[in-house]
Image (cartoon, rainbow, N blue to C red; front, side, top):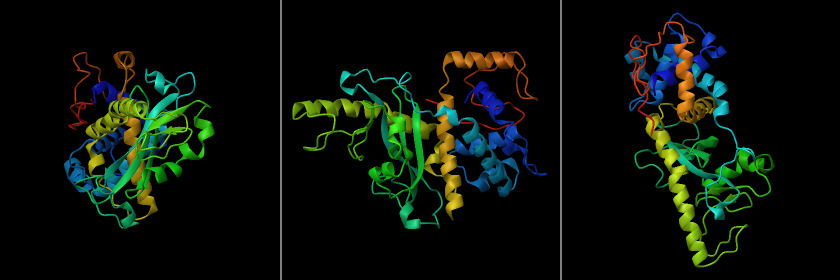
Length: 323
């Protein structure tokens, strides 16, 4: 994460009411954001390790993380928005006319064995080779390779189609889709009017009556888009936020499950936030060049926008470079 993106993120979050919670040990909003980003982007992100690094108690690290996650969800929620008819991009392939995105699922590994609904959170065979328990997420990615829909919190054993049926996207299709709109979907989803997985055997998608060679060519194009959209984004998302391979949250009850879900959701919002265009970065640079920055941080023309460090007075290394 560049210094400009970090400063811009702090500027967006720092006035959130979550940071009004005070205690003698709780650091200011800037450091709370830094602690949370360190956990999101750390290869080792246990609360105990982070607490020792920052010379804080585990309880304080947990509170700082909760505050920042709440602020991210509230302030960056608009970073994941469903495309309307005017904004929807296409995949540049006539046979996918009307497709507004590509839908797929992924799994987030749990570092600590859950106490709540333990067997439900057991990973499905082949989902994660190094974890027994996980949380499943479902997302729709645009042709521009950004999240336009994100749904998390389903236990690791949940099949794709069951996850879709429980989601607001499925329950409120009329709000999301026009008559001729749909999403391309990975193989595990059922086929219906607004959800189009590849052909399997003699199955026919509701919109198509193709057979034989036409089905094979359709599936080939479908798989290419899967690799270059949903699979690419999930891989990049986990590369930027390694904590998604080993979430350091123990699910003891419904409340801790909600915190785990919010942690995952916050990283999805941040992923879209990091996909700033060069023109957007220039605007942010101008803001700080004009002195509209967080108090205590001086603009320096020698700052490299690709720097991977926070200002030196925090001493905190941030996320790996985004892809």
